[in-house]
Amino acid sequence: MSFKSYTDERLITSRDALNRMEIKLKLLEIAEGAYDPIGYKFGHRLLVKKVLAVIKYTRTDEVEEKELDLESIEKEMKTKRIYSSSNRWVYSSDIKNGYITATKHFDLLADAIALDYVVI
Image (cartoon, rainbow, N blue to C red; front, side, top):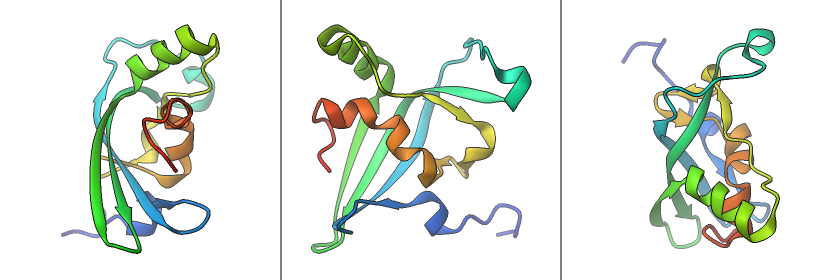
C-alpha cells in the first residue's frame, strides 16, 4: 500500500457522545447529473444518493450494516415533516478510499436519525 492511498481510521470513524458505537459511511452511489449551484465558489461537490452505514457497538463488538438511500429518506422527511435537515452535498476531498470522512456523518444522517432509521 502506498502512502498516498493510506487513510487513517480515525479520519473516517465517528462516535456517539457516550462512545457506545463507532460509525463509518461507505459511499455507494452519487447523483451523476446533479448541478452544484455554488461549486464554482467552493470547489467540486458531489450529491450523495446511497451510503452503507457500518455501525460497530463498542461494548459487544457487534457490527451492523445498513444500506441507506438518502434520497428517498430526504423525500420521506419532506412529506412527513415539510422540512429536511440533511445536506447531501459532500466535497470530493471529504471522500477517502470510498469512505466519507467523519466530519460529514451527522450532516448526511440527520434525516435518517430523525425518522429512526439509525438510532444513536
